[in-house]
Length: 382
Image 1 (cartoon, rainbow, N blue to C red):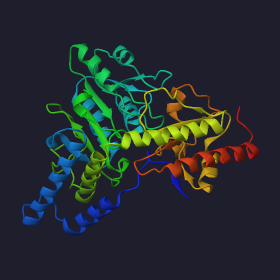
Image 2: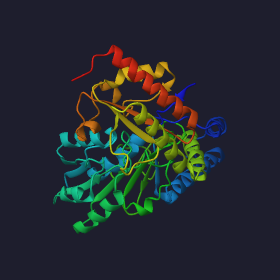
Image 3: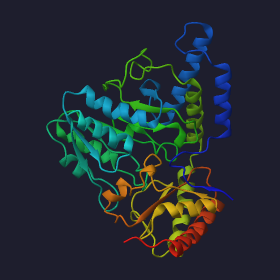
């Protein structure tokens, strides 16, 4: 059997979403900005998708800006806020996704000052550390809701409350790409000014994300154009993908038991793995506050890549960490931030609403076999 446990990288699109996207491509091909009848119909379809995505995060349709990806949504929320301010200091956690972390590095090259806030041993930053990093020139703070590699849930509501004590407005951006669709997300309770989400993390199509933008907040657009999406994201809207995003959002909202069900499968997987591989360890304590779908396994002295290949040969698909970072063949920046030795390989197993108990059982057994195989053939790293 094939056990697909790389859902933090991308999820399998649901059949009804594929059908909705195909129908929109066939029947809704007109430009939503056109004034004729088919254009108006396309605009109405886009509005419906916006309403569905807004409902997923408990926001209002006018607060949703469609983007080309979760990465772009993060860039619009974070970089857009930074460029909209005259202040030139930014605060980010050191375990942010590359969409934020590398955007911060580019802003640093353009004259911004960056302060990184490291995580504690439980894989979470604290509101106190974020507040301590604030300077008179701080305009924007970015802390992700769920880390995409180790699954820890960051205390963004606490951070938002701490930022409100500063005495002036600081834009707070939250990357919720690994949260929405698995756990119910209510942006009104998080205290953020912008929140990024992505369709292909919740069984929707690739190529579309969304940014929730709190009313009254100002962003600088990343590029100019025809003024679509309230002049924040110009370009003809990707209507079929937006339709798919809307259907995916509705399906995620309907599956109210998803988080509990997936957490149970993750816990079963971790129990099996750490019983069968006593030398393996979780990247963060299992008692840490974590999202239900990500299990991060450390293998002291073993490289991750050959283990992944051995897993694939046994029908198990997992990853070293973020899919956008694995091509570097270096240890994850997130693991380095946690102080994990470079000789330790890290594997990420990520589940979804479609994951079955059989996949979990198979993956745990395959990992045991794969590690034994690599231990026989690969000299342990020191």
